[in-house]
Image 1 (cartoon, rainbow, N blue to C red):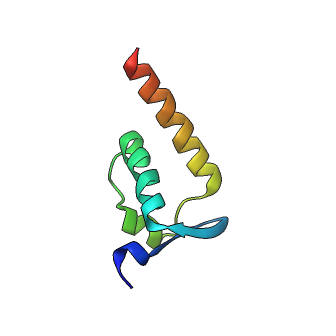
Image 2 (cartoon, rainbow, N blue to C red):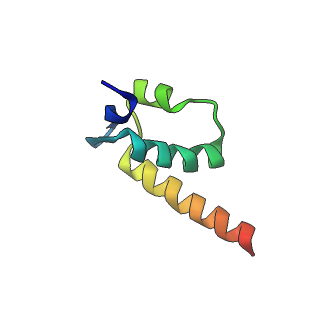
Length: 68
């Protein structure tokens, strides 16, 4: 299975494609750093959907604040 074919686990739902997880991780790491790699997060069970929502909202607020 190639990298592009990998699936990323979600704690409370179906797995997502790795490319989508990379996009979420980009927001996550901008907010919280890179102490855990995307691969490590996957090993630990992945993101929860509520966590993804919070990451997205925090990221949007941060980017909006930086553009003001």
